[in-house]
Length: 226
Image (tube, rainbow, N blue to C red; front, side, top):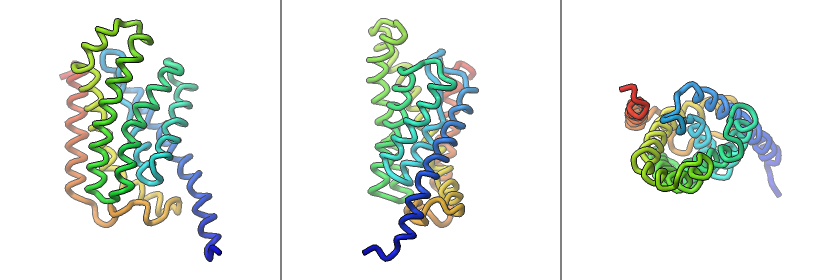
């Protein structure tokens, strides 16, 4: 017999509340991303992946899928003009980044594990989006497949690597503060942050800032600003 039923009941009640809050924050991040111009009018930076992968780090890959699907659905119904195709591409992009990262981090809950998991997430997402853009973009945009194929190494791959690097950097910077705030609010258990607790990891901080700054500069290059 469970000797602590109240504790398990409380934890079960906190999780939906936390996931709902993360969905709201992810949607707010999407709104913020709307102010950033799209690269060549078709590729948009979306910071909601940061919140999705944080949810995946806390609760696992299935939660990352849930947050991604809910946020993308709300986006489709409110601010997006791309319909079901945009919804599909959003979910594929976010999940291909967050799910591998959450799977690896589940097995290695440390700062080193976080870095490796995010690196894997960026690589998988970049590869997946090359495939999906090759399949979907010619049909959706009415562009010859040969043209899309020629853009994969020069536009789609660089953009997704840069976007992934920025989101990986932001995750390294924000994960500990977010989990600490959720823990203080009583929404997650003390173990949710794995072994990343304690003092701020200077290496992760430097790496996160470097990724975000470098990625932002590369986005400006792709936009033709610099």
